[in-house]
Length: 60
Image 1 (cartoon, rainbow, N blue to C red):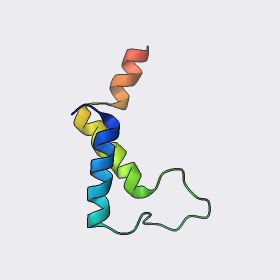
Image 2: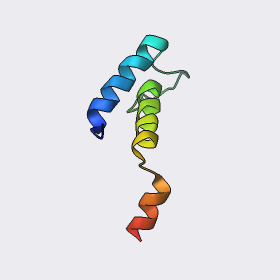
Image 3: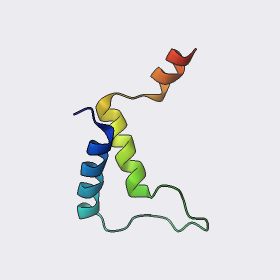
Image 4: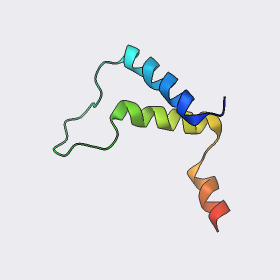
């Protein structure tokens, strides 16, 4: 399952059944991603193997 968007939708749906709050801290400005969405992106990146350190080394 290397389809990032399909994995993202599944993880977000699962996280929303576990926790109903989208954001855990009150912020004055509206963030582009909610905390739940950010957690989902991080989990998928770990699952697929996308790593910021690997990206920075490949870019050099």
